[in-house]
Length: 385
Image 1 (tube, rainbow, N blue to C red):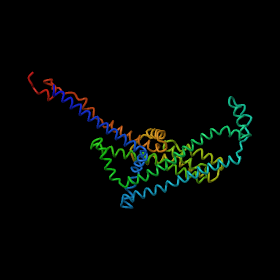
Image 2 (tube, helix red, strand yellow):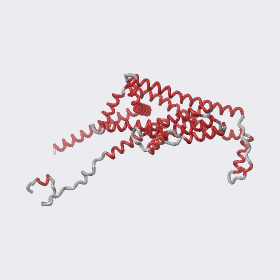
Image 3 (tube, rainbow, N blue to C red):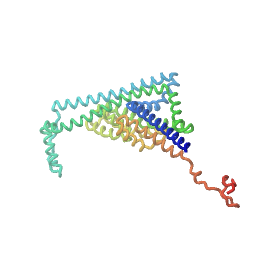
């Protein structure tokens, strides 16, 4: 009885120690996550960029320079120089659009033609639409005063979205610089990733999971984000050279639509129609129309070339990842969402395919044809009853 009480006390004491240690570890993990959480998106984006650009880093190191730090610095400097061009064009376009709109409103040069009498004869909405149109054509100031609260609300929303885009660009630049640091220590990072995955999933599956994650990240980043960025540059250059109003904003819309796997032609076709309607049919507009059509359909040629190099990820997975990332993480989520969901998708199916074979579970004991007894070694152990 005494031994039983001592064993029970020892068991309860050991269980209490385990619970205390587990609680302390949980508190430490939560506290570390709370500290690291403000930098989570930045570090994830930097890791994605580093994994995507590391083959280029290895090529530059092998061909041009012989040091990891110099190769990483060269990639970061060139990438920042290339990023300044769309950022400058976007800022210039937004500034010109705002100034043009304010100038039109101040000069009272906005003239609305009188409505046709046929509009009043339309059923249901004809007469209210005719009255409202007539008021806007004859007394624009009163209509503008009525619409001012809605215009103010829409303007504040647009300003908020533009601020989010600006913050996204700043975070992207910071992530690119941190990615350069990651690439400079790429070999150490690879060994660390192998050690972590091997510790979590075993020494046999660890290298396979590391290779799977790396290939998926590169495939999604190059085949989705890379193609969308290329299309944005092609479309944006054409819009700027043709003098399309809001060229920077339209190029940004083309980038977002490319990441969400929507056809960029939804942006280029209305712009082509607008250019032909305002400029007429000239050699410049014809060349612009052909160029914009080719730029809008460039993803059909680039996707088989770039997506085929990595892991095959279904397009619905990319679309869901982009939409979900946009809702949950804003502009940065558009980049992180497809990559994270694609990695999770591939890991899930790898786990499904690596399940134990069902042949061992369906095996039945072999029956001897003469004695009609199962061939089980344990049954050969003849012990007295």
